[in-house]
Amino acid sequence: MRYERPDTIQDATALLASAEANSFVLAGGTDLLVRMQNDDFEADLILDIKSIPGMDAVSQNDEGFVIGAAVPAAALSEHAALASAWPGVVEAANLIGSTQIQGRCTMVGNLCNASPAADSVPALVAAGARVRVAGPAGARDVAIIDIPTGPGKTSLQKGEIVEAVLLPHPAPRSGDAYLRFIPRTEMDIAVIGVGVYLALDEAGIVSSARIALGAVGPKVVLADEAAAAIIGTRLEQKALDALAAACSAASQPIDDKRGTVAFRKKVAGVLARRAATAAYARAGGK
Amino acid sequence: MSSIAVSTTINDDDVEFLCQPDETLLDVLRNRLGLMGSKEGCGTGDCGACSTIMDGRVVCSCLVLGAEAQGRKIETIEGMAQGSDLHPLQTKFIEHAALQCGICTPGFLIAAKALLDRNPDPTETEIRFWLAGNLCRCTGYDKIVRAVQDAAAEMRGEPA
Image (cartoon, rainbow over all chains, first blue to last red; front, top):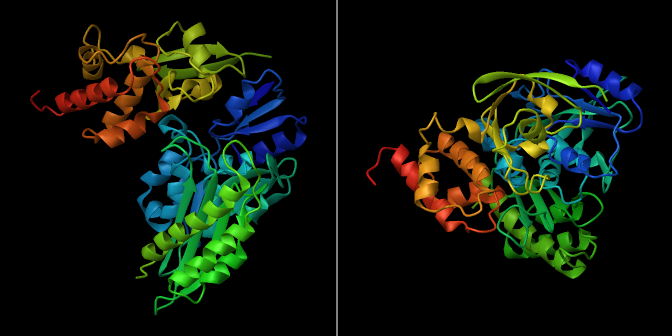
């Protein structure tokens, strides 16, 4: 096994492109190092991207925020402008693991680990975030929802590395929120997670929305019918009922030790109501 | 596998070591540098017994590669007391009997220090959430939380 720490993204993608099959990108390491403890883990290359300039930085440009792939979750809540613009995304990332994990874990790692229960992913999908993917042929921007393809699987090609999360500047009168259900109070894996983004028109009516569901399918679900259920409303009771029903219908979960199909479908609707209500308040709705 | 040469700073001392690419910082500290204060509990980032501070953030050293320490600033439990003068947290852990077997104690102290470095006056809830990644299987958490509260008050200069 080799450990490499390139100084440029070009060197990093070239190393990955020419490496053997078992190559792993190391940012925060909170998933990778756990896997490395397994006796049957085999790696030819561990590629540490933290010496590449920009990987550990949050910056802003005309389009929005650029969050480097190695920015730990703890740094997100310390970035006042980001936490104010996208409180739901930051809350979701801050739900991952303990203080110790927060000091290392990254949203890009959460995305590329491709767990269906990843907390930050539904929040990022709801926010309309994209990622910048660097590869041997150059960079491309990809919608978050198109990265995971199933449990532990991504659409990244050989030699490709997710460089950064791109979050747009939020629209006027918009808000986001993320809620999850866990049986404990902290440090647990989502049984259901719901991310909501919505924007209001000048009259306080929902003009656009995105609802994303986690842990209710092999990958994050963008529930268009749930969004349609609240667009054109002020989140009256009837709209919230329709939202909950649409989220339950869009959920295709499995039974496992953490929750049953019936429970997950029901709670997806309950959390969607609450998250939408929180996002509505953040958008300035009354 | 060929060894990697690493230059780092541990408890304000410049340190150089050789390690294997798959060797954790915890193993380097304990097995190569003789710093046995950081403990291995689970080895998978769940228990916090191996907590160390890296560039100001508390991390599980079992989830850090030794090679990643290059150019970083590491603080371990060995650097907490100044000579024979214990840190207020250490003193208060003893006074409150906030330990029994002691395996979790270095991790709790390091994590609590990182908290008080950021927030000198945390609420009980903030302390409990911050320390949720440190597991104790014998003392229970109440004495630990009270020791942290008491140490924080002393460090703020409030009368006992």
